[in-house]
Length: 357
Image 1 (cartoon, one colour):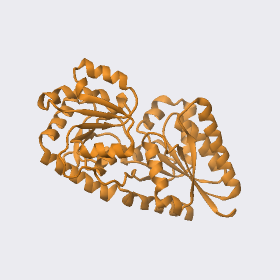
Image 2 (cartoon, one colour):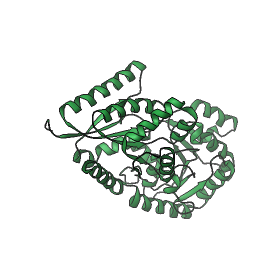
Image 3 (cartoon, one colour):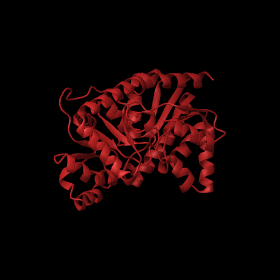
Image 4 (cartoon, one colour):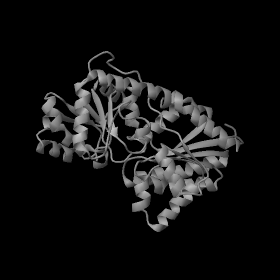
């Protein structure tokens, strides 16, 4: 890249880390899209000590500045979530804009509206408004988020939906009988973990051998105590963080994937389950209903409705033919709408539009 060439940067958490945003960034950087646009990735956050996190942030500012000194500014593609992510990205985004980069805000995090409405002071809201108004494009993960951004920040120039893309994976154990229940995600109340545990006694009455695997980190010790208090602990295992191959194998062998969240943006775990041919039970929050229609690609229940959740799990476990129909529909919708082949051309088009503007 010559000294007069244009540089595009992507700013995000470490893609080698855990979580949905890291998975999205890792997939985007691995795609030919990244090479086509000669994207330089800048890590703004890495889990560790406070000293390490401060060092990584200062290094990000330095890299951004150096790239601008060496090249003409192109796009600064900023992956944004709430709380600490916003604080870091506000500084980096404002500095990138000052340096002449065209800002693309890529909004993640199913709680960003709560963060803005309930947690931000008046001064911090002004900062959020300023960052959003700096953007040439704000990319969101569903219609709910487009509506929210457009109504909350009326001065935003352009809000566009581009869904997360899922993995390119061939389901394991094809043709083999599926069994068990899988949850993947952070082990917190907002993901509906207590609800899933509380739904299990009714399921066990119908299917005494059923097993539930939780993949993820968080409040596992607390939820293990809840399982013991309900006498379902022998049916539950907490596997901790699960790597891609093990995760895809688990999804490909499970009878049902359950994500009973109270809020979401557009969860990667739903896309992973669709790609692996899992039968899905989830809730009508965030962008989930834009991927899963009730009775078509999976089953949808209201958040917190434990009896309805039990009934949905029992229905799937008790009717493998119906479950297979739902999972086939979900896999087809994934291939058509959420695979890398479907999503990455939208990013190509967006970058072209911005740089030609």
